[in-house]
Image 1: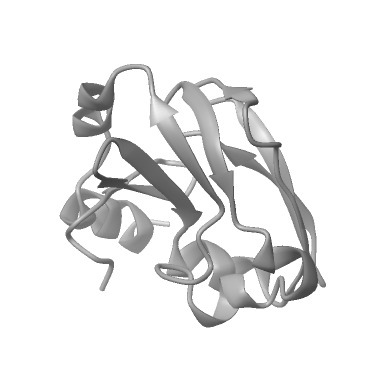
Image 2 (image 1 turned 60 degrees about the vertical axis):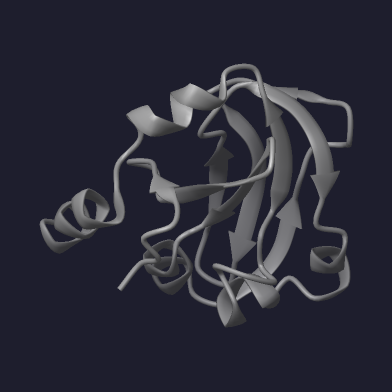
Length: 126
């Protein structure tokens, strides 16, 4: 079951507001489909990300996939621990495996993304 305190994209990213910052990661379903994550390429602090556009790449033993921003805004923090331990995305996709923190242009945009229930229904249909 995906946590109900965040929203989800069709591309399998999650986003959770922490104060005025949006924390972004990939879902448990996504990390499971990727397999063992071996590398994560993320933007730099201060970079701008655009909603539903690629902001990085995640590589696993199976494939490489683009990462898509759930909202537009400026990168406030990058999970630097993933450089030395990319497997954290597999071990804790909803906690220690977060990817970036973004100061969203419009925090209300998050409300337009899927709820945990809606995301669960999408995944069940795949």
